[in-house]
Length: 224
Ligand code: HEM
Image 1 (cartoon, rainbow, N blue to C red):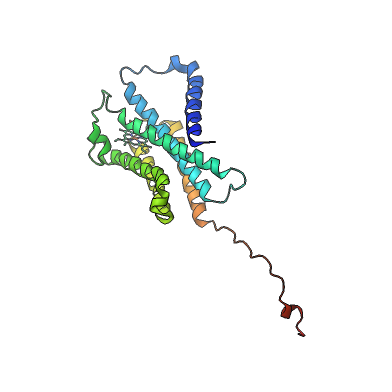
Image 2: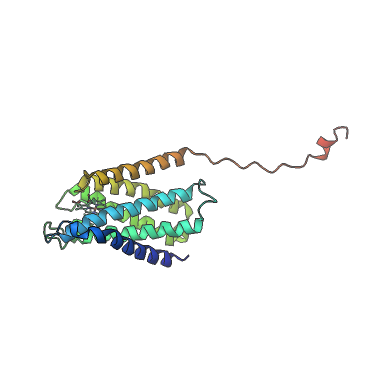
């Protein structure tokens, strides 16, 4: 399946599923009271985090041999890239939608220049840096030949730093961190990443045994 098709199908499935799940409870949701942008930013931040986490988890699966034969590698790669691109788009939307919000006074500089934010300077900067790092890692795929496999691998390792920055940013700055489902989401996703990383670093692939050679004539007939 082509990458474009995966992205299109994911978006359509997300919209359809979201509508089906929300329709029966829509009338119970709190009124946005003119702060729709703020709510939208929070929702997009959480979903962006989830998508980028899933992209990282997919990358970890691909770099290990654990799931060989269970999941097709080409398909996993297409999903991995789609999740990264969708996560990046959501993270960008999460930041940009803060500009029209009336509660806050974010401008482009606050959003995109690290440590320039008027609000929660260091924690907001981690979000900006995570965004840039994830963008570099995601787009490096198309420049793999130009930068070479060794540099590309090092660039890809930066996704852990990006993930940790996004996690710290969300936990520290988020309004919803103390809501039980969100706390559980952070705990579960971060422990899965750290656990798989520890496994990945300590797991040694079993070496293939060299094919047995036929005994030499001298060994087979010591008498000569
Ligand atoms: C990869 C990039 C990013 C990810 C994954 C991300 C993720 C998150 C998450 C999960 C939250 C918590 C939402 C909640 O508790 O409801 C959050 C909150 C927030 N983020 Fe980001 N973020 C990213 C980039 C940015 C950028 C570039 C900015 C701009 C400075 C930013 C500004 C904020 C602000 C102001 C909040 C507080 C919203 C609230 O009160 O919940 N984020 N982000």
